[in-house]
Length: 75
Image 1 (cartoon, rainbow, N blue to C red):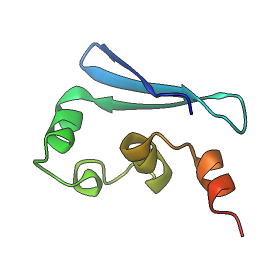
Image 2 (cartoon, helix red, strand yellow; image 1 turned 180 degrees about the vertical axis):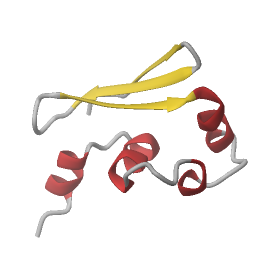
Image 3 (cartoon, rainbow, N blue to C red; image 1 turned 45 degrees about the vertical axis):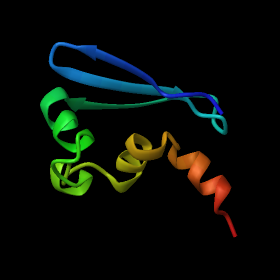
Image 4 (tube, one colour; image 1 turned 90 degrees about the horizontal axis):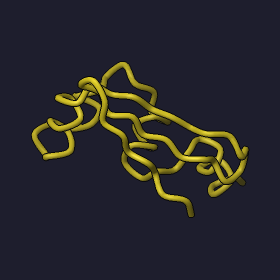
Protein backbone atom coordinates (compact mmCIF):
# COMPACT_ATOMS: atom_id res chain seq x y z
CA UNK A 1 0.00 0.00 0.00
CA UNK A 2 1.30 3.44 -0.91
CA UNK A 3 1.97 5.75 2.00
CA UNK A 4 0.38 9.16 2.41
CA UNK A 5 2.68 12.05 1.52
CA UNK A 6 2.52 14.91 4.01
CA UNK A 7 3.59 18.42 3.02
CA UNK A 8 3.60 21.57 5.14
CA UNK A 9 3.24 24.95 3.45
CA UNK A 10 1.84 28.30 4.51
CA UNK A 11 0.20 27.18 7.73
CA UNK A 12 -1.55 24.24 6.09
CA UNK A 13 -0.83 20.51 5.98
CA UNK A 14 -1.40 18.73 2.68
CA UNK A 15 -1.99 14.97 2.62
CA UNK A 16 -1.85 13.21 -0.74
CA UNK A 17 -1.77 9.61 -1.93
CA UNK A 18 -2.49 7.86 -5.20
CA UNK A 19 -5.58 5.72 -4.79
CA UNK A 20 -4.85 2.06 -5.51
CA UNK A 21 -8.35 1.62 -6.99
CA UNK A 22 -8.93 4.74 -9.12
CA UNK A 23 -5.24 5.51 -9.82
CA UNK A 24 -5.94 9.19 -9.17
CA UNK A 25 -4.40 11.28 -6.43
CA UNK A 26 -6.55 11.74 -3.33
CA UNK A 27 -5.84 14.86 -1.29
CA UNK A 28 -6.96 16.50 1.94
CA UNK A 29 -5.74 19.88 3.24
CA UNK A 30 -6.13 21.08 6.83
CA UNK A 31 -4.91 24.05 8.89
CA UNK A 32 -1.68 23.22 10.73
CA UNK A 33 -2.87 24.30 14.19
CA UNK A 34 -6.06 22.24 13.92
CA UNK A 35 -4.09 19.22 12.74
CA UNK A 36 -1.67 19.52 15.64
CA UNK A 37 -4.54 19.86 18.10
CA UNK A 38 -6.00 16.59 16.86
CA UNK A 39 -2.77 14.68 16.24
CA UNK A 40 -1.34 15.39 19.67
CA UNK A 41 -4.46 14.04 21.36
CA UNK A 42 -5.94 17.29 22.55
CA UNK A 43 -9.25 16.84 20.70
CA UNK A 44 -11.15 14.21 18.75
CA UNK A 45 -10.91 14.45 14.97
CA UNK A 46 -14.67 15.03 14.59
CA UNK A 47 -14.43 17.91 17.07
CA UNK A 48 -11.48 19.54 15.33
CA UNK A 49 -12.88 19.01 11.82
CA UNK A 50 -16.69 19.01 12.21
CA UNK A 51 -17.32 20.12 8.61
CA UNK A 52 -14.95 17.57 7.07
CA UNK A 53 -16.55 14.52 5.48
CA UNK A 54 -16.23 11.23 7.35
CA UNK A 55 -14.31 9.90 4.33
CA UNK A 56 -11.71 12.66 4.57
CA UNK A 57 -11.38 12.15 8.32
CA UNK A 58 -10.83 8.44 7.73
CA UNK A 59 -8.15 9.28 5.17
CA UNK A 60 -6.33 11.34 7.81
CA UNK A 61 -6.64 8.54 10.37
CA UNK A 62 -5.77 5.51 8.25
CA UNK A 63 -4.59 6.72 4.84
CA UNK A 64 -7.45 4.83 3.22
CA UNK A 65 -9.21 6.59 0.33
CA UNK A 66 -13.00 6.29 -0.04
CA UNK A 67 -12.61 3.94 -3.03
CA UNK A 68 -10.16 1.73 -1.12
CA UNK A 69 -12.53 1.62 1.85
CA UNK A 70 -15.44 0.67 -0.39
CA UNK A 71 -13.42 -2.08 -2.07
CA UNK A 72 -12.16 -3.46 1.25
CA UNK A 73 -15.63 -3.65 2.82
CA UNK A 74 -17.87 -4.32 -0.15
CA UNK A 75 -20.62 -6.88 0.31
